[in-house]
Image (cartoon, rainbow, N blue to C red; front, side):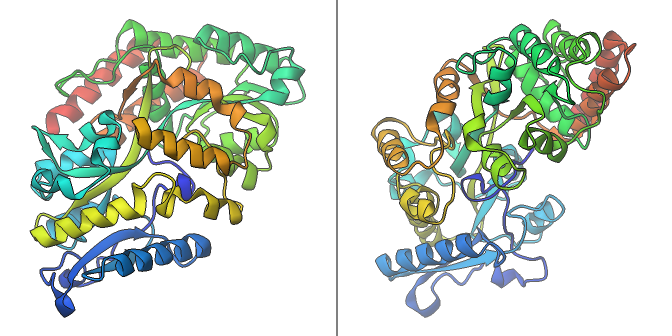
Length: 448
């Protein structure tokens, strides 16, 4: 699933319209006016005035520093539209440097639409500083086909004020699902419409969260070969049993179900929800759009201690891009997104001046000295309560980071039905639900 929001939360913006001509996107004319010309996408739309201005400023600064390169950005909404993405690839209409979600990387390679960047990586000064687990997402059979730009991992957002009111220690968030269950019950017992824990169960979002919860228990949705479902397991049963018992035995999840992300965010922002699973980019949305307060919102690692779902995005290159365009594009990525404490995503001082949130624990893209510098500049410009996120940062060091399964949206659609059944039917048969869902997922995998 894609995240919500913009800027540091900037998850989905801009593709070149299908109405554009082929030459306007992935262009063979890479030497216009004696310069190497590259088309790129994911430029903020005009409606996002501040981000649009920052993006344009950064492109101009890059072209000034590299007078032999002409960057032609394209904007629309979103960055990657699932309805047009494959058509653009197949029709040769993709930009020279184009945006992808992590989950699309292997697909683009498998259909032969990505340029092999391996011979040109020396042009990307930052490559060795990027977290290996993120680099590996764009590495297929030892060859590099893309460059990560941001990454996120799921955690537990909780309301410190409600924890205190319920007699819970807000500096010791739940570390296991049993502790989540206990805390949720105490928060729900406050009454007045307060819900202890909420979860999604519609529009594929229930399947997405089931996957995250399964990872947290040490389970998997599909096997290592991507050929068989692995949800009908003790870990899969544990996920559903916990949800069922919180909903029906503890009555800590409220009576309204079939919730989606906006419903849950509204509950948290209004101060009526104790906990839900989300990535850090939810926090500014809860404050700026849903009425929440930064001081009340904290973030803990995924309960369970085994793993967490990660996602993010990056850039790949059109298979028709020339060597000169690839070299130019890599230099642009370095300057635009991959310089610690600088560029479109890393200029924290500039972001702070525009009242954008600075100090959220993610994205955390780099390692070593690059990470230290990025964190230092972020901390110096922080305008959110960074201490509220420390347990998330500490706990994530011990979790296995796992991306979404193949054919994620089709699988999530199946799992939606499983989660919604458990949350809307007290007598739901978990054994049968998981067995039937496994068969459906096996069919999806066999057809892919």
